[in-house]
Image 1 (tube, rainbow, N blue to C red):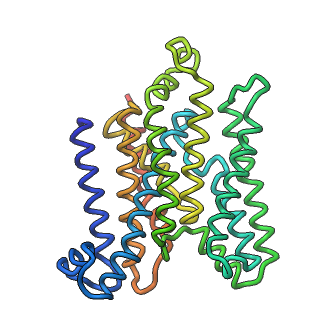
Image 2 (cartoon, one colour):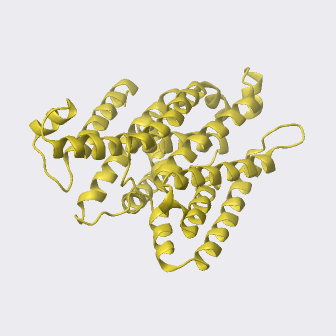
Image 3 (cartoon, rainbow, N blue to C red):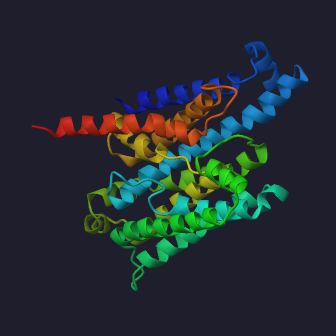
Length: 332
C-alpha cells in the first residue's frame, strides 16, 4: 500500500477511534450534546464528563498507545529482534516495582502523584542498570548484552515485586495487581499534559533518527561507512525510546502487546523503511489503544476491564496470525 494512502487511512482511523472514545460510555449523550460540550456549552453533566473525564482519557490513550508502538519499532530496529518490545528491557518491571512499593506502603492514598512518580523513578533505575551493563569501556553499546541485561534486570525486579506482594496485606495486593494490568481510569488533564511533554518531543527525535536506523538495519559497519554515527544513534534511540515508554507506563500501568504487534502489522503494509514506518506506528498504536480502552469500558459495563487485559486478548490472536502469515510467505 502506498505510504500516503496508508497514512491518510490511519489518520482517519485515529479520528474515528477518538470520536468513539468520547461518544461511548456508561452515560449516553447525543452528538449535539457532545459538540456543545466540546465548545464549552450545554449541560453541566455533559460538560464535565466529556471535557474532564473522557477528553483527557482519550488524549492519554493516543499518546501512550502511539508512544508504545513507536518505541517498539525502534527497539526492534536496534536489537534486530522481532520479539523486542518496550517491556523486554526491564522498563516495565522497574516501573511496577516502584508502583507496588508505594501501594504496599499506602503512600498513594495520601498523595496521588506519588504513584506515577515512583513508577517513573523505577523505570529510570532499570534503564540506568541496563545501560551501565551494556556499555563497554570504549563507550560502545553492545546490543546483544543490552537485550540480555534487560531480560535479567526485568527478572530481578519481578522478584522484588513478588517479595513486596508477599509482605503486603490483601487490599494493597489488589491495588498493585490492578495497576499492573494497566488502566486509563481516572485520567486528568494534568496527567495527559505531563505524558505529552515526554511523548511528543521523543516522537520527533525518534522520527528524526529514521534514516540512521535504516542504515543500522543493513549492519553497523556498513552504516558507519555510509556516514552514520552508529554509537550516538544507538545510545540516543535507546534512551529516548526508554524515556517515552517510562512516561507511558508511569501514567497507565503495564499495557502489553501494543509495542509488539503494531510494528509487525505496519511492516506488512508499508515495509521496513523507518522514515515511513515510525510515524505510521504512532498513528496505529494510538488508534489501537484508544479502541481497546473504549472496549474495556463497555464490554461488561458498569464493570471496567483493565485495558491491558483487552490488548492481550486482541493482541495474542493478532500476533499469532501475523506470525503464521509471515511463515507462509517464506515457504517455497
